[in-house]
Length: 353
Ligand code: GDD
Ligand code: MN
Image (cartoon, rainbow, N blue to C red; front, side):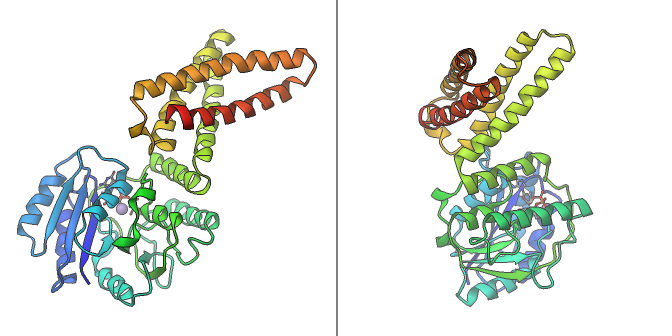
């Protein structure tokens, strides 16, 4: 089988040499190549170039100066650049043992799968490399929740969060994917039906360097789940929810320091409008951004709309209450619900047209 091994790297200089050293005997006698897709800010690219120059197998480096889509975007870029029909995706820190590659390839050679997943949670697979109990718990729980959200698409996959898998290149359709964060396999499996096979593996401790997992990656993952499952409206709702909490917190903080309530409310509202805009840009409408004018024109439309919307909504709710049509609580709830739908429609069809 011809094989392209895709390794996304972000500041992994201590691991490159060891990784290539361990992959080399595993693919000896085949035409396999390694493609590093690198977003590093340190000396990793020059280490890769140096290792490539003396490697016994072909090693290519794609360095991205403008990294789009993080780890997931890097993997897709590697798949697009692959020479082989099958792409093996693995981490650069040796948590994915190269010695498992032949087992994955042999499983794919049976010809009944589009993707062969190296799973920590099947057979004698192990997740021990997840250094502490808390991470193991988070990993297990999020795997269960994710499987519950996509019961059909993930039926045959015990480890949709793994970054170690072999995929048949023609079954990856880049146009329908929205790479974000760390979980590219989930993105692939959730968007279209794949024939999934699995092979167990033991997740190893990191060889050198540090993990790039973070709270921010966790939030990105939640956003990815929401968007995959319920589309843009849910991402929009999640951002709105975060904005509401931020708004309340800012008002509480400012008034605690003696700022008059009206002033605090205005500052909180404007700060939230700006914050929401940043989140919408990055997470919800990231796929429509390029074709929707400049960031300043989008910001202007969003900012103006939200201010006009508040300026109409609050007096309208007040009027409804004074006309004895409804109570204050109901008026607030009703106008907020309408505003949510109108705001979503405006952003989707006007701001990101
Ligand atoms: N190109 C690129 N760009 N590579 C990245 C980026 C990025 O923005 N962020 C991380 N990487 C690379 C790292 O250099 C490493 O090779 C790999 O992606 C995984 O990152 P780690 O920092 O090792 O994160 P992890 O161990 O928490 O996550 C891995 O294990 C998870 C299973 O627990 C990833 O493989 C996940 O996909 C996997 O689910
Ligand atoms: Mn890792």
